[in-house]
Image (cartoon, rainbow, N blue to C red):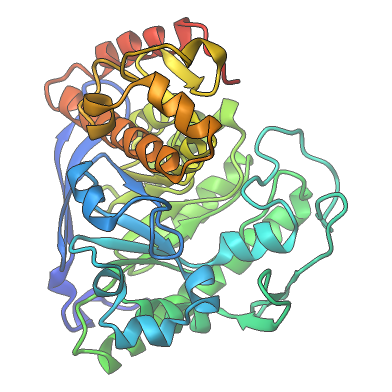
Length: 417
């Protein structure tokens, strides 16, 4: 099967990426990614709006928070409301009233994580076990993988669905995001080495099928803006598999790359460096599912360009907020009379107008405004943090900023583990 020439795609000129500055140390770089709906200056954090909404926050607010793009999920939008409805609305951005660039992931992560019962966690911080039939304790298997695709039951109503590389492309083309991801098999750290090898090969075959279907749909839907296709590198914690996956996918005519799969946090920087050292320099790399400050610094230093994660908004809804001196919980008793902002150095609306005492009260009273105000802060904090990394790298001071920030952030006592 020959690789496809991106120049054959009508409208491919609507997407481009260039590196404008390289870090003096490490693999980090400052870049500029152009899409049909705007430019993303990289490195950049992309907030997650899983079901075409960042929970508890208006899309208009995301602009005020400095978000350059948002990411939604193909699996969830396929199930509800249906990708055909989003297509009829004019695409994801029009549907959710977001004017900027959009991403959709392929649904592969959700098919596995929900199907295996792990939800948001895929054995991220546990040792591997010799087990290929991975299922969370007390859960039923909702997804079965074969060489052609995945059959799964909806977590909403139990209905049966089938995702193949072609179906994922069809769903994502109807959703209409500027950047879409090839359908991949996302494994866990529980899987055996033998299974990881087969999975890497399967993911490569699926990526080639996605390229073919993407090419066909781009021609068929020439009335829509061009959508950039990113292939996803897998291989878990194995260096040879990660490097092989990166080399194989790097040879495909895709517009960029995702770095996916379960990553042991202690090895994150090393694994990302394996991958980025093998990928083409002229295309962007998106690190999937990473959002904690220390992990973001590691990913940027290793050469990743964009990041997404649900953690800023999810933790906000549970009263956990970020500050320059660490993460803490607003419901702790010491915040009851704390008439000060979450973080005096933060420029978000919440920190400019509300106190920890008010937020403590709102969370204790289960008021909906609590989630809104905490999410505004957390999203702004993380978006701004990666912006500051980009600015520091541009002035050749990334290492200094990293040392200063992390020393302050992790050097303080945090009441959230």
